[in-house]
Image 1: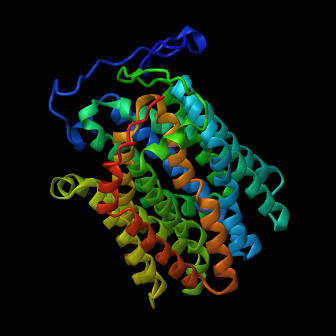
Image 2: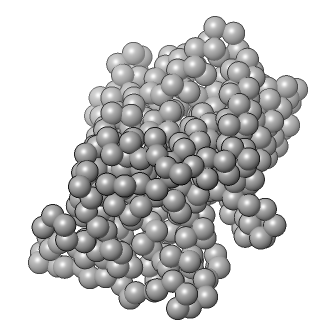
Image 3: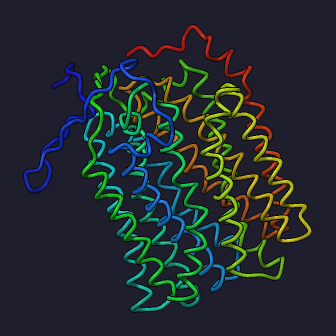
Length: 441
């Protein structure tokens, strides 16, 4: 009923009459906050993290294999960018509505529905390739169409997934939980691209896309069985999609943080869009494409375990701005690298900067937003981080085709430097002191 608070841990009846109940309450201050290792051993956080890593590896398998096969059949970086455009455009148009749905309904059920759609996109492409094949323009079109289906699934599940993650553990553990929840996609970069390239070479694209689909099905099952901490979710008088946008007008700090998130979204695109032409420039192929993506992911994976000590010495806002600066510098360095080995090394550093930036920026956002708006604000996060990829892919692909992938990296480095300046600590601090920072329904 309207006016009655909702509890995140309370789930409607599921198929087969199964009803999930909330996990035990963990009031803030009742117990000391746990660190990364202890949370990874938690019976809720641990399985969720493992399943999300598996799903993220499936995403990377799909993305890398799609980029390679489209480049093989077309020879165009712009068409490789079209795969990203098709996959991430739904984030721009669907995510805000899905955020409003997540604030009103069953967040876990929404994640399951979205990931089943993503699995259907990869699985249908696997069947297409096995039955019809993957040759010429028709093959490229099939990959792009599958990317659109996958993207719709992400748009449905993304806002709900990010909105439920604070309920995985105690409120005092939010920074560590956000680090853990953010890391699977980047950690999977260390193995997913290499596994995708290996599956492509050994078993072919149909098997690779089939594996990607299975990974999404596994994640959907774990989320379906998830037990969450009970969270009071009061209903506001404004249940509209635009309530999240209006909140940004009242909280300038979150608006600046989302600009930084957009910068990170631009910064991760070259690993997919530009790695095939960069590898071709070094006289290499799929193996170097996978090595570049894996190096970026390995840098992010290492940073997961470094962020704890770093957070004890520096503020979240300083880490976020510095991470964007490191990412900018690494992209410029890749553009100037005379050898593929140096390019891979600089991408490792770029992964470190990216992980520090996105974890810090996301933690600050999650700490500020009210629970009743979390889905809609995190939908805007999805638009900024994932939905920015179509624009990034179009810009990077067009510049790479017209001039060179190195020129695209230089332009990207300048954009990232601008985002780092806008998200610098002094600006965030001034915005946080705004008298309009508190949302009022």
